[in-house]
Image (tube, rainbow, N blue to C red; front, side, top):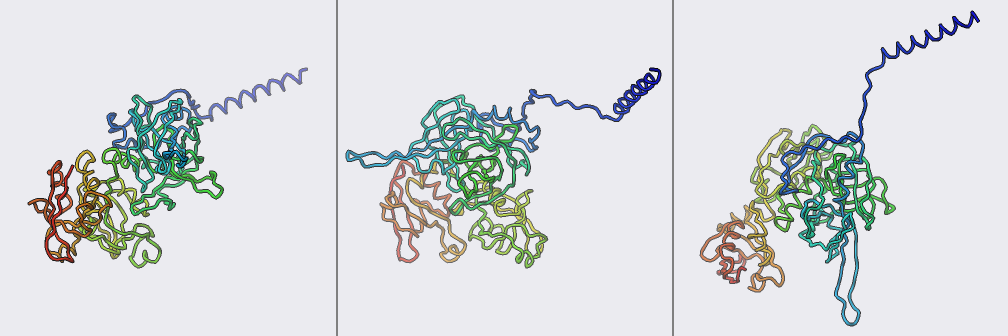
Length: 479
């Protein structure tokens, strides 16, 4: 017994001494409390215009990785979109009926909804089902195939909507959630990380396409197109658009349109009925190893200018074929999608600083963007915007070569729509307009201004054809 007591005492002293040493070496405990939320702080947020184009924050939102709070906030604002092709049936049973389904995102409390163009393009009737099962018929405001976006509107107020975040602040590896409302299953949420930015996958067609997708590994399946990509703060950072797959099912690659581009596109669709694109006025290609060596570039990155559009903004600013664009403002440009996204956010008339390399030297110049008619003017659909569409023709400004050759002021009619007011005057393409009434015009902007002044009355256009002698006059009414 006497031998056991010293052993017990020694054991107790050893245990006490071990605990004492551990306490001295251990750092302070950090307790993470769940259930406490900190309200997000937004800068320049205009509540009267929820998609005005103002960017929210520039910090990373990926911590903590608890998605429950964000999911609760965003799921009520994601809806099911059903596009119906409803042709009239005759007494003999002819006609057709079809439907396609996808998702959409409410972006304002008064019922504006953004979705993909490919979700609605085959429909002429649109049905919206909210997360709480309320159903509405929607009106198509406008669509833009070049970015695969469309804007719908339902007649309702005080709807839950998503706040735009700043997709520029996303970092590769950051947590994001994909939220959709497929097949009326109510909102579904999947999570993943940002795999890459500025991806181009060649799925869009057209001259002015912009592909600068956010790539994620969040699961996106058929029916989720047009849904929301959000960060862990619950901010809308993209519109889910496409997947790359061999099986037809999700295989780990999904792509979303960045929110900074979405804001500009849908604001144009709402305000003008079409996208007002500011164009740099260049044809471009990627930089490869060969031309990087020939041009003395420090890295194989940037955008190579293969040609410059006559009378475009780039030509006016002194850019030339063979130059390599390496920056727009303070943003470094490494790839074509990055350049397209930066320019695609801007309107005609916007001036940007272009950084470029020519013969191994770095330069910068100010470029004023123009539209496809080489004018810096753009107008609201409430004003003159619809005028050219109503009249049915497309004028453009002279190129520098045409100015030198013709030695006269005017604008050229490039296209005339079949069945339009202008076509009924028997005007032909390549007609050169020199006057509206008694007023000389030397640009598309001046032509639009004079047509606006004559709205509600008759207009006489005076001009000529380069290949035919004499002057020609055309008369029509401007509504």
